[in-house]
Image (tube, rainbow, N blue to C red; front, side, top):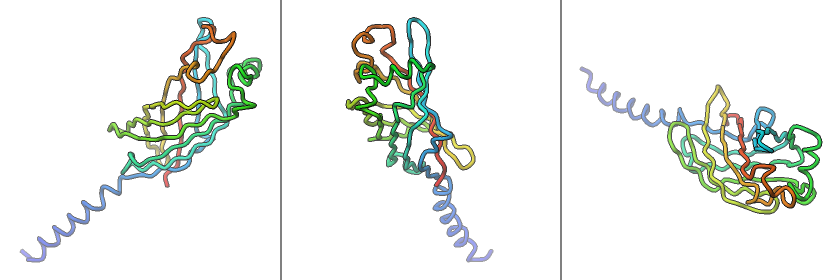
Amino acid sequence: MNPRFPRFIVLASALVCSVLPSAYAVEYTDVNPTASTISFTYGQMGSRMYGTFSKFEGHLDFDTASPEAAHAKLTINLDSIDAGSSDANSELQKPAWFDTTTYPQATFESTEVKNLGNNRYLITGRLTLRGLTRVVTVPVLLKAENTIGIFDGELTLKRDDFKIGEGEWADTVVSNEINIRFRMVAPQR
């Protein structure tokens, strides 16, 4: 047996071990708003209602090799709401609801990411809506498809935490809990 052969195996093994972990790491960057969605559901007089936001901007710095160092920011234009009718959309712009003249945008900015394994993460951050900021935690599933990453998440917020739907709307005509779902699509870097 060639005496150099064992050294070659050790060297080859070292190279493979040092290269393989980074070969599977993937970095995702800015969110593609055309391919992404933000939707919400809520109850109104016993019925389940559905709506969307069509204008938002997301920034993402996410490396699967070190997800704990990830950072995400999402800005939503509140006047892009579609709650199913022009009357509802107009009503939601008013001061009792989003007050889009004073507060045109909602923002979320991450402060911590926990890796739960199996492409599942818990993202904690600050959600600001109507000038009020609350800490929220969002479970997120990352699905890799070709050269993109799809980040699916869902959270429930309470209207009264952000003073949304005050006055005559503060009663139970519209549910206090609003379920928000998002699908952020980001290209690999």
